[in-house]
Length: 517
Image 1 (cartoon, one colour):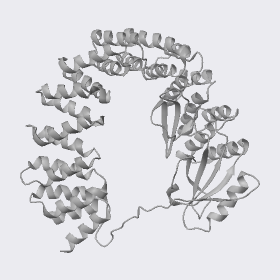
Image 2 (cartoon, helix red, strand yellow; image 1 turned 30 degrees about the vertical axis):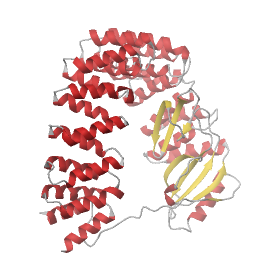
Image 3 (cartoon, rainbow, N blue to C red; image 1 turned 30 degrees about the horizontal axis):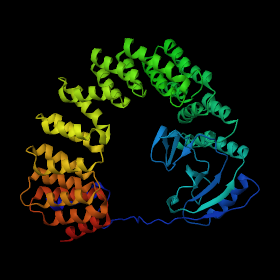
Image 4 (cartoon, rainbow, N blue to C red; image 1 turned 90 degrees about the horizontal axis):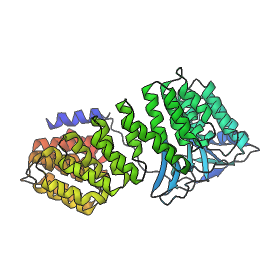
């Protein structure tokens, strides 16, 4: 049985005896090699000539004039705004917790090519102030490109690329340039590109560049347009921070008939007031009217969620009223989450009351989850709730709410529950949650539980699963030991399965050894 399981594990990860492969995880920090040339194209040609002499892919990279108000992978702790990830590139548009604009100006476009062809296989935009390994490939440095040659090159790249992510990445590169021609180029992609990824990316960035409300609104109104593109256009209006954005969205809500597009307009209005004081009151009034009066319950729910973004007491008061009066369960669940986001003491008290005594089980669970999203501030309330509760379903919800709270008191509670709760199911859940915590203390506990002579078998199995989710450096040796020596065959099988999921060379060597016997 054990041998057949090992063979099954090897086959599932693409390995068979005699053809075992390992991949080195070692990488080298690359220094850049400068190439010369009269302009961007000649430098790209020079990089290609040098790259052909190597056996590995290579990067060509250059800097450009970066528009203000945008950050790529900045080193910040707290951020308010929007984040979008494109490959290895995460774009931030917003502020720090204290209101300072987040931006990075030292950016470069990196183009990855194969040495045997002049075909770009990957494009990234990296923050040069962050240390990177560039996948261990050489980087040929082209210096700074002027806006005209860079924009023309990227426009040609986006237009010529097959229908894949490279064209989308080229549009991102264009949007990040500080140049008056960017909006016109983006609108050109929207109106003429056959690539929906390119069009959608261009629509999104038109909102970030600003000044294109009328064009974006025409897309939202157009029933012949793809629905996802219309939704993106609505979102972009909200993100634009342009004066009158809420008035435009309100007009669109009255005109557009499609329920999905209307809900996108509502959501966009919730973002329109971010960093734009003039739009706060119009957005609040628009959303509150929908939340209280719209016949579409999904529209009300969307508006309620958006109201949670307003850090003001009247928003909290209205959300409490909606929670008490609306007959739709999903709307009331959204109101609980929104109340928790307002930071209002009165709203927080109402959420806690629902977590303790709400008769509807779904609403009670939602209230508990909303409490958990408050983090450390909710630990005392959650601990008291867990200790006083008898219903297993509610206790499991409380435990799950602990998952995102990084607190020593929460970890202490998880240890207590994992060691001695009367419910095996609750103990197993606590063990799983401990497996997600990186402390040595939690790993030592999992190790002792998995190898205990008197532990419940189901608890031991959960401990082994949790061990398998840890870093290979600590988990693999212990899993091998359990697979070799544990007296319970089911636990040994679980250790083997977990080893197979790691793909670690030590696990493969262990499988070789067992198969050779």
